[in-house]
Amino acid sequence: MPIPAKAFQRWLHGIAPHTSTSDVCRVSGIKRTTLAQQLVRGKVAEATVVNISRAYNVNPVSALAAFDAYRQLTDPYPPTRAELVSQISTADLLRAVLARSSADPGGAPAAAAAAERAGSPALEPAPHATSVKNWVEAIDDGELRHRVSAATGIAPQNYSAQLTANRLAPELAVATSLAAGVGPASGLVATGLVTEAEAGWPPGARQAALDSLSDGELTTLAGDRLQTLGRALRRQEHDHEKTEKIWENLG
Image 1 (tube, helix red, strand yellow):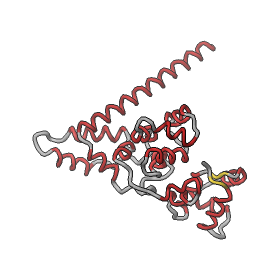
Image 2 (cartoon, helix red, strand yellow; image 1 turned 60 degrees about the vertical axis):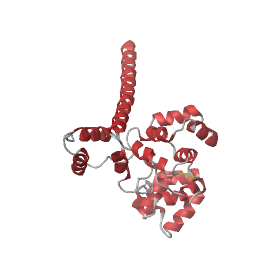
Image 3 (spheres, helix red, strand yellow; image 1 turned 30 degrees about the vertical axis):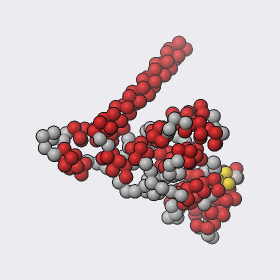
Image 4 (cartoon, helix red, strand yellow; image 1 turned 180 degrees about the horizontal axis):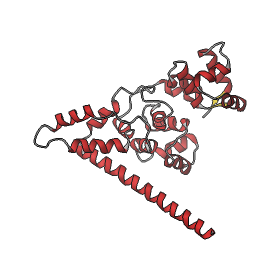
């Protein structure tokens, strides 16, 4: 839900008093025309608030919490292990599988795995290609989508369409968190609006969650991700073939 322009201007005056719109745009990297259009419409995008917050060293989550639509963000709490794992890319999961399989079975696997992690690259930052859908699936008890639909009025098919596109409007991300009983800022991390650190996630939390997975859990999860990726690729190939046939028929 975009921020009302009047509320935005009051907030902006609080963090950058006596600063011109031109200076705010220059510092935050926002185009003047973009901000001007949002103000004229009376609705300022959440991403605008986030970018300006960062420019003035204000935590974006705290900044959003200053507005009525996002008051729930004032009560942050740690993400669950399932949420953390959902924000690990498929490539990182596969690297972890290979790293564990390279541990010497006749020696000390745990020590070998730890040594392998010490020399391996850091996890890719969130979000990743399927982070939104994975996050919702990680916190879904089977009725989550119905609760979100009832709370926000969004049609289930429209909600599913956003997940398929790996996106979720900020207000829906927060509503999903609340409906699932998890930290209200988690969805904003999954959508990429804010970073893990800005949402208050502990440093190294995703790596710790990955390390806590048993070999069986890790392998199963990686396999599930690959199957999902395979289905998506097959759909893309099928759509591409249909498009080519249409062009051929058109001559």
